Image 1 (cartoon, rainbow, N blue to C red):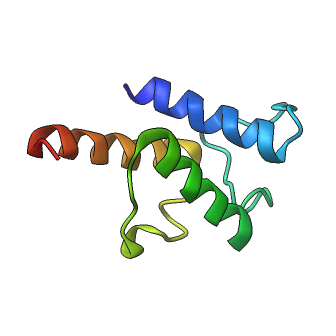
Image 2 (cartoon, rainbow, N blue to C red):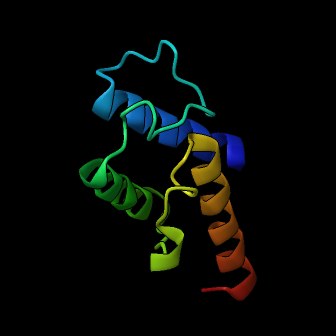
Length: 89
């Protein structure tokens, strides 16, 4: 499941903010240092995660560490999806 989540997040970022050009961009690229994420794009990415995966982030989860890379975001999304499966919510 995580590879698909990672690919979906990466595809969204590349299409939305990199004009389809993924050269030099991978799952470990620092989204803040590279200038991809700022407050506006972070909100848009949160909306994408909600729309695409039906996961809602808690305020404490919205931080620089969580949004550091595609890999970190994907891990959080997968954790939330697995929790939802376990609880049946």
